[in-house]
Length: 213
View 1 (cartoon, rainbow, N blue to C red):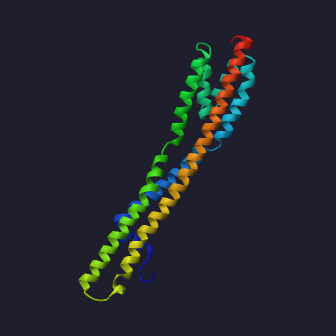
View 2 (spheres, one colour):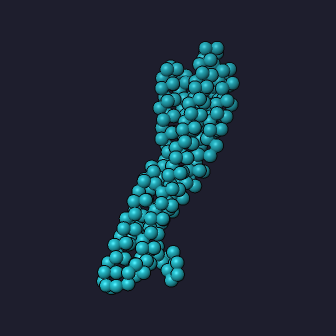
View 3 (cartoon, helix red, strand yellow):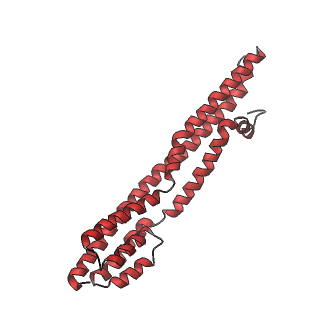
């Protein structure tokens, strides 16, 4: 746009554009943090369960517990460590309930700051629209003050105002896409934790029956 750069329009529309830029930085930070935190959790959960189940079926709980404690940086490692550490003093029914409770805690922790993405996705378009409305009001006010000039007088002001809407939509689109992506990914992780936990409990039950551990 001749005579008016994007940076200048962002600066002039600070009432809406500055919060949207802050939202964009927060959104990108959360996206990269969640991508890192959720990596390989499906494979790690099923892999750990498959690795310790043979030991549990043979009554070698100590060996399985040691392997689970070696992966306490993962949700599955923390769940299995807690369960196996209590297996000798608790009934299987209680262990199953405890496993479900631990799994729920881990899944909630995995969601972490995703609510921020949802909030940004819902509010960013409205913030952009608010900036656009304010910009248009200012543009028509300037035309009224000048008393003449027609649309040419307010063209720059309207183009400036529309930057807020464009920025708001851009931030919201990114936030919504990754919010839905992470929600789906966490559902897959939860399913993997459920399958892995059931396998571990079944193997522990078999070991108790066969070896009295």
